[in-house]
Length: 118
Image (cartoon, rainbow, N blue to C red; front, side):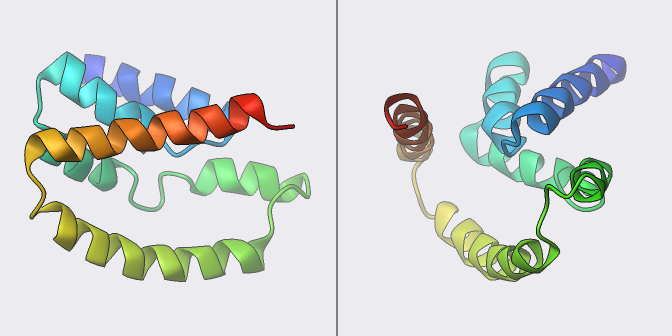
């Protein structure tokens, strides 16, 4: 089974590298559907998989081509550090079904905005 998980990681990494999305958008549903994980466990596992230096090689490729702003990325990382911590604390208090719904609505909202705006 471990080779299969590596394959899922490769596929998520490819899509993330191509379109610049966070791997969690793909990892969380994959972990819920393919491994039968709870929403809480899938989100926590996804965060563990995305810890640095997972994205460093993709970031470096974008940076070498002049397509990444190091200052902005660093400031976002600082905010993400704090927000991720407090968000994770809050998520532990949300019932499973509501956490899944919040995740789904977030995906729909982001997807709809991308699809219907210029």
